[in-house]
Image (cartoon, rainbow, N blue to C red; front, side):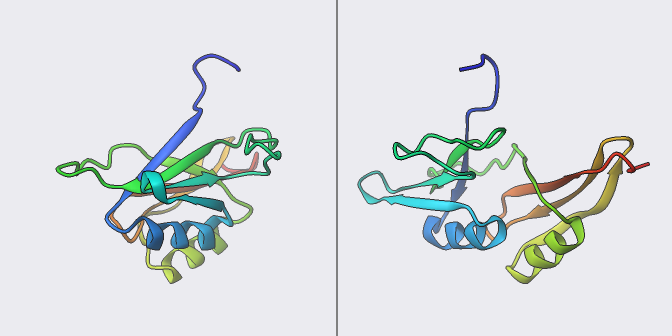
Length: 132
């Protein structure tokens, strides 16, 4: 395993099941409920029979019940998408609020930012060398 790379993410929610439904519809993530831990494991790419990712660049994560008193939504996870425009439409239709519209990262691509239905921040990114 390569050192200092992002290896896992967690998104907190007051209703983890409802929020996992949002993200599976938004990004087609596969989820595995772990009721004994009150946790939902997220596979953001293709996995092998042990649940380890086979998709380059993808990471596993989880959706968990927000710990009592935990109100900070400081991290922003960026998910690669095929279309910023389609992702904006999809996110808004699923109950997200767009906080920053399609924005260029010169020479790299485009992104847009949102708040999910539970108030967590997330973003989408599309690589595009023509973004200027």
